[in-house]
Length: 283
Image (cartoon, rainbow, N blue to C red; front, side, top):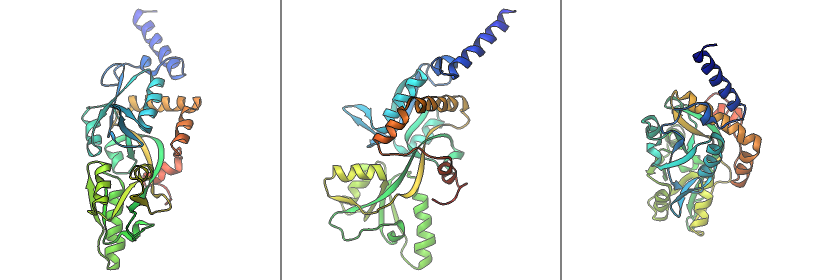
């Protein structure tokens, strides 16, 4: 057997053992990440309880999730604080390997990046506690100024509802106000620059707690249920497969389910993913 042929067989055997769980995935395939041994992660660190800085270090659901995942991969997790609206552009420009920052799966986004679904979430409506207006559904927002995080995937749906429901019924359109960070959107509500805050449900809960009763969640059910995914550069199948295998290991170890339970989240089903991509029934 020639040296080259022997080398190829050893490489194939090493990959097989790694994928079976015997070695860190990074040992199986080099050059998948931008920097050897490091998984660089784009994340907006202004979005508790998902991603934020605590004493200068990344904290929240996504940093905890990525710490578990990178341990499975044999990589070091390195976060790069980036505003939400620039995350997709950043991963495609190779500023980082992956985005972990509550990025919702939408048909439009799947044309820009590839996803690994890992979380099911939704949105809530928030108003000032001293305001008699208490909307339960987005259909009640006609003529209202609605603040939200810039780039939020619910914004196109909200604007479509404004046209198809509000304007079509002879009511005033919804005014969408977008802000660079979630705290800025909340401040707009407090300052009466906005009538309503449209926010991720988990973020809405922690915002209400932090503002100590100055704002309340008026909706009772999840609005526009969504699937959240890790985003990688379009066509980066090698990295996507490593992330997928690492997540499967987390599930076998029970780490994934324990983390979801602690943050009161659910694992997305195939039906949830199909709906998020426009291929399933309305939830």
